[in-house]
Length: 443
Image (cartoon, rainbow, N blue to C red; front, side, top):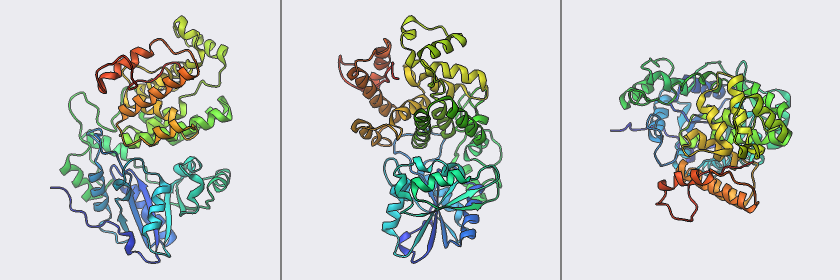
């Protein structure tokens, strides 16, 4: 029998109060989340701080990650002994991708007049706020509080940029610097290591009773566990991300840099929806166009420098080689990057018949990041969370193949092989139709 929840927040019962909203996956909720909620609530005199777990799709996720139902139960247990805290299932109850702007509008609709909403976020997330969905509307929907700590704060230029883009004047609130990550907690559980004191006792007991995050068997990787030689340090390390972001800005032009940031954000969002490692996805999105600043002779020289053996056909298509060269160069220069991340970067233009979930997330993010426009792109974006990752990948692949044909561009000869590799997932192969792969030859 599941946990009977009792601390769910009812916005309609609030009257003229100041409400803080702290969103997140909460998979699981831990001490750093609660310390942040308490610190910001006390500093700003909030009447209530509400933990709001993010929604997930109804289709199957990785079985080692907690379901929406379990994450709501853990949030309920975590706030039980603090009358200032509560939780809400608002985002979980809504189908598809949930955008912050939509959530805030729904809260405005349900809260009585006179209530103030304070949206609480970390400094790292705040620095990307100007690229969020409907960013310009956010300042009119809520006040914003940014939790800062040593090494994660907001400087004056960033404040000015986000103020201009979003109409937001945030309150910066220092919080105790607890270095706890949900991903690391899942890995500890999978490895049989204790998490006591890192999460509330009731949450730890719930995880044990439900068997959440346990390793799935000999040779199988549990969520959060390390994949092969390296990767965890890089994908969990915001200074590493920030350093590569600054380096990328000097390697590519402003338009390409904005695109890379957009792909990083989109990949992170897709990862949350489809149960993929979010840190890995964000970093792959940032780095996927690492070599895109090179012209055609430059990319061919780069391939030669890296010792890549290319077919004559690929050498005639230099615009699609940047994924291959970036993966090889990044792996050489940053050995802490995981093989899975490097593979996703390598495949983001040419694809493969055996794409991993991370490969597909990056491929889709590259096509649907906020800077891409058009009716077909918008239609595909609306399918996020409504169809499975593989199915969405197929639709995006079909879109790119059609686009290449419309442009009368050269399409890599193995595109048909890739396409046919995915067809059985949808229906028996028929001579024509649009279903499953990803186009080779995408610039």
